[in-house]
Length: 63
Image (cartoon, rainbow, N blue to C red):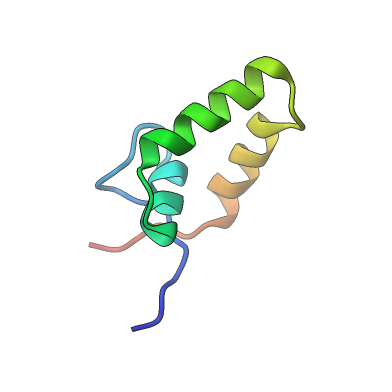
């Protein structure tokens, strides 16, 4: 079965991006959320911009 990167409904807190990434890479979405928040606080790159772009680019997962 081929894996596809899609936003998640089941693991969604805000738009489902971290939930979809977690399902795709088989890691806990909470860990990804913490990484995004820490990167945002300490200014590593542009995590907020990356998150918003991913929210528009990644398709929604169908039920």
